Amino acid sequence: MSSPAPDSNSPPIAHLERKARLLLWLVAAVIVGFVLYVMVARGVFQQTQQLVLVSDDSEGVIVGMDLTFSGFPIGRVRRIELADDGKARMVIDVPLKDARWLRTSSIFTLERGMVGDTRIRAFSGILEDPPLPAGAERTLLRGDTAAEIPRLVASARALLENLDNMTGPESSLNASLTHLNTVTERLNGRYGVLTGLLGSEDNAKKIIATLDRTNALLAQADQRVFGPQGVIDSTQGALASAKTTLDSSNEAVKQLNAVLQDARQTLTKVDAVLAEAQAVGANARLATTDLGTLRAEVEASLRKVSQLTNEINRKWPFARDTEIKLP
View 1: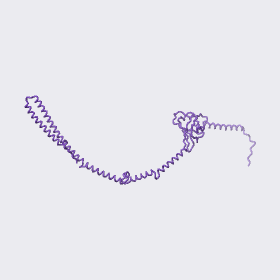
View 2 (view 1 turned 90 degrees about the vertical axis):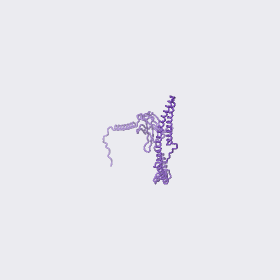
View 3 (view 1 turned 120 degrees about the vertical axis):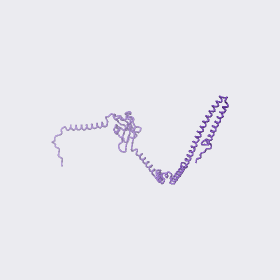
View 4 (view 1 turned 120 degrees about the horizontal axis):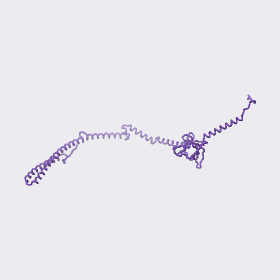
């Protein structure tokens, strides 16, 4: 079935060429506006300062990658170059409005995980430090998770080997558990802790027998010392007798003091008579008679003193042969 032929009699479109040019200009303006928007969005027209990060390896870093601070992009990698010393240099453009977050004490890290993209992060612990100058070079610290896997595997293998050695049949842990089981069985035995400490029930039985004999000896000693006929009771009786003797001696001493007082008075009289004898020499016969009387009184007093002294010497504790006999 053939298509209908165009109508040759239809009127032409007015100003077709002008409309085509206008459409082309409109498309070009849209393209230019989109490019300008992208350039503005990418910060092409922003004032920036350069930051150079130096690393041993730039694997995972691409041009256009963001430099982030607290999760926000504050810079972009403009180019990557290889320095003369074989290290990678990453030139980063940082807008001036975001450069205030970078300080002289800031730290830059390159983090590359097992899953996800590589990230360049900045950390500024002390924001009061001086700002980072333009064109500064800093070392980029790497934190590669994949590089740590071999070391982690080696550590895990060594740990498993040590665990296998610890739990083996001939291991020290197994021997310790065996000894602990033996001690636990002894503790659950007849004599309990004594069996566990001494190693066998026979040794524990000997210790208990020794303690029983010791208790019996202590009971006998207590009876002999503190019992009714013990040493303490006998000693108390002896002390009571000694107290009675001391009381008698005190009475004798009091009597001796009285006799000495009488002798002192007699001697006083003698002194008076002698004084009178010296004053009155004519009455010598009378003085002689008085002196004889006084002499007799003095001898009687001295005789009493001698008797009391002998009596005191016969009593305890003045007796020379005193002896306390304890049962």
